Length: 124
Image (cartoon, rainbow, N blue to C red; front, side, top):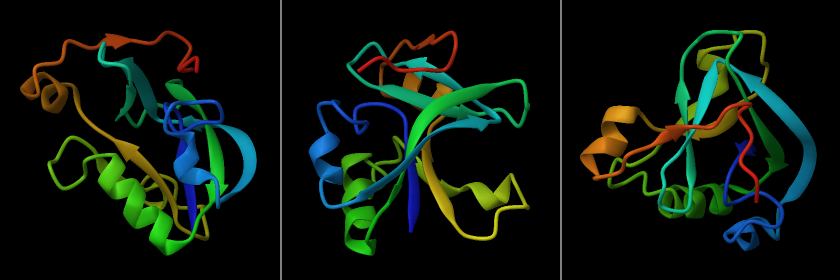
């Protein structure tokens, strides 16, 4: 399974050890998203569907167990993040590629006051 990470899970990030058993594939740009700084030590991506919005990330090949662990790390159960399959947006993709996203309203409901990251790249 493929997953794109763009924040604390990237190489050198404070949570990168969760991907130690995964294969790094390539640095990548993903269109249709904006990135925000949560102001709490992590970024998040928001789906926009606009091709001129993009974020920078790293693509990994992960095992299903790692993907389940990432769901826990990304607080999917609490609703902070949602794991989506990029095929929902980009029908040309032949295999699932997952990315974790949130919304501005969801982050606000957790008491966070995010700020857009110009250029869509989180600096580790």
